[in-house]
Length: 280
Image 1 (cartoon, rainbow, N blue to C red):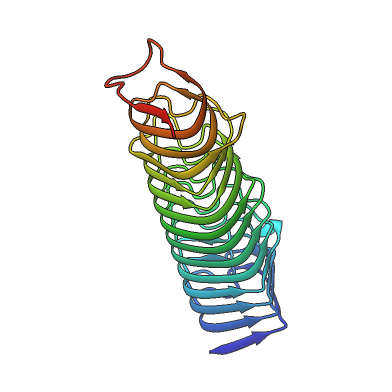
Image 2: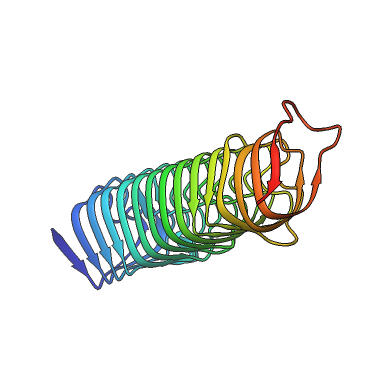
């Protein structure tokens, strides 16, 4: 592997179609597509300022690096990435990619990141600002996530999340086969139109959560006191610890809680309208 150290590159495609390179303490200046159509690339202690540096790259490692705002849309149409100990201030990262391993990464503008990706493995990721992280992605495992981005995990499939703290709006819409463990989920309209969404040891906040859900499962979950109008038009099995303020028009299944503030069953409830609701 060729070592390139303590260098600067700018302009159009300075390292186009390179293979078997180790870039150490390299700065990619303003320009476009610096490392395009490449393979087997290692970048350590590097700074990326130009647009689109890693497109169509196959097999690469990025460690202890920094992506400035100008390095937007930096990682697209690529596969087999390992990224560790990296800070990203640029938006629209990770698009149409597969086999991504992320560890100890901070993304300060998480706008439209991880779109249409598959095979994502995350450990200790922080997402700030932006909208729609993980849109249309699948086969995701997360252990350690802090996010205040809006509309996270929309239209995803086959996802397992552990130890997350998510503050958002309209999260987990239209998802399929998603399980979330030991997490705090704070956001309006959580999990609407989901299929096979399972929450285990989670705390839920926000208005009108978990409506229009199909085959929803809650195990040992708690609800914030202001969290009301839950489960409308949902089929579910829910084990709720503590109190839930209000349950509205669930379609079918079983809901058990330590205490229930109120239950709304009105003329708008959908058939079969046979959900069993009881206190423990």
